[in-house]
Image (cartoon, rainbow, N blue to C red; front, side, top):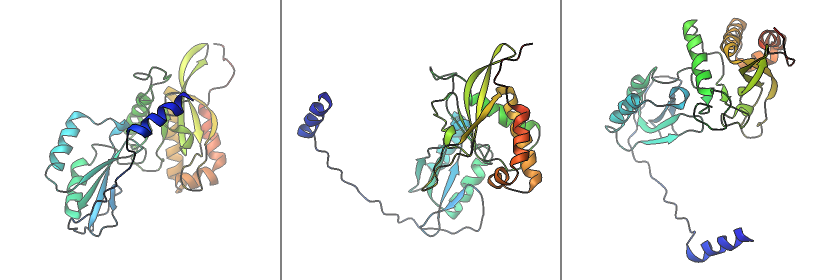
Length: 262
């Protein structure tokens, strides 16, 4: 009743009419033959969008200034923030798009793994349990140390707890932070989810597989990536066709549910 009372007052005092102004795109397009995984042709001929994904969704002030200084030189462009911690820079002609690709190359994520999603984590979030941002940084640093650059793993989704701010349940590969008693020591761990999806007529929650300690997550993902690379399959094909090998890798890193006494 209280809600309806306040709602009626809003209706009486304010106009809720929405006037939508449709924008006309009159910018002259210029085609480019350059192919790049972050370059997206728009429906307007000769116009493109460039995707830019700061690592962990955190854009440094240095890169922010570099980007803004460049965008100030361009006319009639838009920036649209994505739901995955990245941004789309739109209405670029082909020449502008190529310049922007070169400017942002390796300043953010280039592979799907580098474009992974991580919530802000326990270092800032008051109800967070695990450091999801730190976990993603650990993963990327481990792959860098191993000099593994093949783009075989999918974008992963990491939440610092079960609240799913990193949307781990809809990731085809996801992790949710928790605390786990291992050898009688409370340890930061992540619950592994596999097989989630989102999209029209295909959305589903991933299956919870088990828990992996934080220090072992990068090792698990690296071994998985090596196996996928050797199989010559993509990740989606691999988890369907190489299920036994996948389970063998997972079993190496899962924490047993019982308390293991030292």
